[in-house]
Each structure stands twice: as structure tokens, then as C-alpha cells.
Amino acid sequence: MPAAENAEAAGRPEMMPTLPISAPPGTTTPPASAPAGAGRGETATTVAAIAEPGNAVGTSPDDTAETDTEDVAAESISPVSRYDGPEARTRAPETTEPDTVDVEPENDTAAAQFGPSTAPGERASAHGYLAAPMPAHVDEWERRLLADPDLLGDIAFAIGRPFHVMYPARVGGNIAAFREVFAAAGIDGAIYFGKKANKAGCVVRACAEHGAGADVASIGELSSALAQGIRGEDLMVTGPAKSDRLLWLAARHGALIAVDEPDELNRLVTGGIAARVLLRVRPPGSDSRFGMTDAELDHAVAGTQLVPIRLEGFSFHLSGYEPVPRSELAASLIERCLRARDYGHPASTISLGGGFGVDYVPADAWVRFTADGGPHWFHGGKRFDSYYPYHCPTPGALMLAAVLTHGGLAKQLRDNNIRPAIEPGRALLDRVGSTVFRVQGAKTRIAQDISYQLLTVDGTSLSLSEQWFASEYLPDPVPWPSRPGPVTGTVVGAATCLESDMLSWRRIPLPRPAVPGDLLVYPNTAGYQMDSNESAFHELPIPPKVVLHDAPDGRLRWTLDAG
Image 1: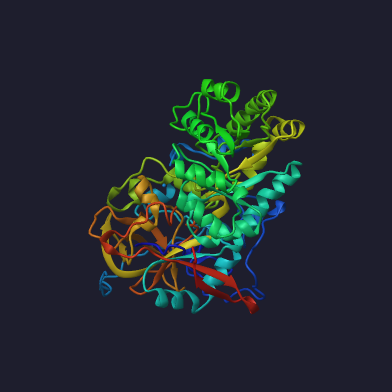
Image 2: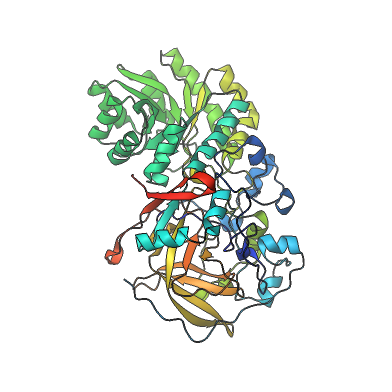
């Protein structure tokens, strides 16, 4: 399988404060030692930190785009960002070294973060074969991992195949950021981790340790969440047409069940199962296969004898990453809660669902890609119709703040004694893990009379799931170990017999040529990339998840995930 299931990493290949992969073509950055006093990884995100969503660890505010929360609806999704979804033998290096590109940066600061500064279209015309850099935001724990001269190599030697790296302490920081927003709004909101986004036991355990629950949709997910310490009353069970066994098990543990259709409710009632339920609402004007219509909701509340069912409120889920529609639909459900109370139901919860965005790359990198990107940057002239919006100006907790602020929603919830719940998946996994592959072979290919590298790694793109959603995972991978060298256009293929099995079609400007034996670290893959399409195709083993732990003196230790 491709990318190691938990690999973490992020940022550029360098070993330190500066991330080389974003260095401008033709420049090299000498390796730097780890920052003095580098100690424990980031374990909490403060309100001050999330107030500047463009900031990466180690990036000054001046290097990032300022964002107005009010403008999220207009800015977060661009036309190119439509997105609804997610044994090989070692080869000797080719004797022909790929051509490299030398470009003098116009601005040293901007170039260090994003590559050379150019006007839209300028780079495409000058070096059309080479894509602009898409450097990922980096946390301190990732800097420490990349700077360690031995740790990644030792893990790769012990595992012997692709692996994923996880740093669960970051989950706690992401939860804390959402809690701070709720507290600032004067609300005691509930957080349920969308477990489908990642199966690692260490993530669910971190949620349990930080007072968050889990959103599950199968007996396997429910059992796993309980095994990692989530209490039954802190589970929300979602999904369509739930089996009788799942309904019984959820009710048995006191979980909150999001009822998707009248039949589920009828089965609970006729079975005499005491259960806590939310009724899932089909959004107005939607053709979604999930949720109940207005008529079905009205009948469930007023025309059904629900004893021993306890109707605790309503839930919904919206596609996309705009806060205003979520806020307005939640506000409309307040009236439904009040009407349900007239029939004797407590109706004190509204779940806003998930879909909280993640900011993967700086604004400048995303703007450059959306302005200049096209088939000329991709191997074989490949093109994709849509991409996840890899830059989000109001990600995660900031998006929740925008939802609660719009139209005075927070005050309406407080005034009517209604508790909001959220079900973030990707947002709680932001900068929690990365995926690591070993380079097995390197070829040279030609585009526009310029050569570039075509690497083959020891896994498949099934462990980097975006390709299987007819799209491309854009944050740049980082070669390890860090070495000086010229920026080199690079595409990455997998170790299967499928022409389409590519981890990166885009000609990424790696900070140096890669050779067999190097590791390639894809950053920030914990949210859906690791698990949603994993497969033992070709009988290649599925990458394991490696969990990093803080140790004395700023060191990191690792174990295999117990989930």
C-alpha cells in the first residue's frame, strides 16, 4: 500500500526552521539544526492562534494572507475548488539526471515560504512544465520529526513498508480550539469526532481524554470507540437504514441515535427500546438521500407515540464549507425544537453536522495554483475537474465561530436553552498525521523538451485516497533526509501494474532529486486520506499507523497504534 498509514511530516524537506521544499527553484538551503529548546509538540490551539488561520507554525503573520471571517462564504471555495466528496524491486537510479530550474526570487521572504513570486501566468510561460510549490503548514512536532537524523529512518527500517505517522496530542489542541469558541459564545456545545475520517485508536483515545465523543455508523466503529474509552452516552450513531442490531447496541449503551428515516423510528418504538434520538432533517431544496422531509418530521413529532423514545432534538449535514447556510438552517430548527416541546419532548439539541474546513496550504500558494494550474503542470497532461479547497481562510474552529455569530445564532440558542452539537472529522485531524513511502525507483521523462523525475514508491495511491475521488492531493511531499540539491520537477507513481495508480501527477518542485532509498513524506493526511480507500491490492499489506509520543529532552518515541 502507498503512503504509510500514519505518516506525519508536513512542510519542506529541510531540517529546520526554514522549510526547503518551498525554496525557490535553483536555490538551496543548508540543513539547520533543530531549534534550541524544541520540546513538546503543540497540544492546544488558542483563540489567538486560530484568529490568524493562514499562520503555520514558524511563519510570521506578515507571510500569510489576512482573512475576514465575514468573507468566508465568498473566499473559501473558488471555481477550481468544487468538491463533494475522498514487492516492488529496488531500481538503480537512471544515469541521466533530470534538468533543474534556476529562478531568482524577487522577494526573499515570499520565496522562502511559497517559492518565487510571479504574476499569474508568468511562471507557466517561463517554466510551464514545473508546478508552483504547495507547501503544507507545519507544526513543531513535524519539524522535530523531520529534523531528527534517525527517527524516520529507524521507523521505516522496522516497518519495512509504507506507514502513517500520528501525533495524537494535536487532536487535543484541535478539540480545545472548538471548545474555546463555544465558551466565547456562552454555550456548552457537544463535540463528536467523525470516526469515519480515521480509524486510528490513538485518535479516539485522545478524544476520550479531552472530553469529546465520537460519531459512529457501524457496529465496528461503535465497538472500537468504546474500546478506546468513549462512554456510551458520548456516542452519536448516524448513517442510513441502521440494522436492528446496531440500533439495539446503541440504545443499550445510551448513545444518541440520529434517526434517518421513519422506519428506524418505528422499529425502535415497536421494539420497546428506550433510546435517545435526534431526527435527521433533509435540508430544504436538497436531493440528498439522507434525512426526513418536513411531513415526515411533523408526523414523527406529533403523530407518533414515542414512548419509550426520548426525542432530544434534530440534526442535519450540509455539503461544502460555507458557514452561513449552516447557521440559517440551525436557526430554523429552533422553532422545530420549541414545537416538539409542546408535545412533551425535551428537544434541547441541534447537531450542525460536520464539514468544517481545513487549511492545508498558504493563501498565496492556493491563489497561484488556481490562477496558473492546468494540464501543463501534470504528467501526461492529466487534468482534474475539481479539488478540495486546500486553502480555507476560516478553517475548523474559526468556521464554527462564523456559524454561531451569523444572525445572532448563539444568542438564539442560549435564549431557548438549546445545546449545539458538531461532528467534525477532518478538522479534528488537522496536522495530526502524515504518510510515508520509500522511493524504489527513479526514471527520467521529458515534457516541453525539459526532463523531470518519475519516482516509483513502495505503496499505492489507495493509501493517499484523493486520486480515487478523481482529484489530486496537492500539499507537497517532503523528501527525507534533507540534503542540498537543485529543485527538480517530480511526479510520483505507485508500485502496482495500473497506469492510473499515481500518488502525484503534478510535477512537484522537490527541493532536490530523489534517489531510491529516500523517504517521501506526504503531510497532513490523517483526514480521510489514510483510510477511506485502503486496500490490500496486489496483496500488498495495508500501511500500519505509528504513534509518536513526547519523551524527555524534546525527543519523540514511537509505538504501533493499538486501534
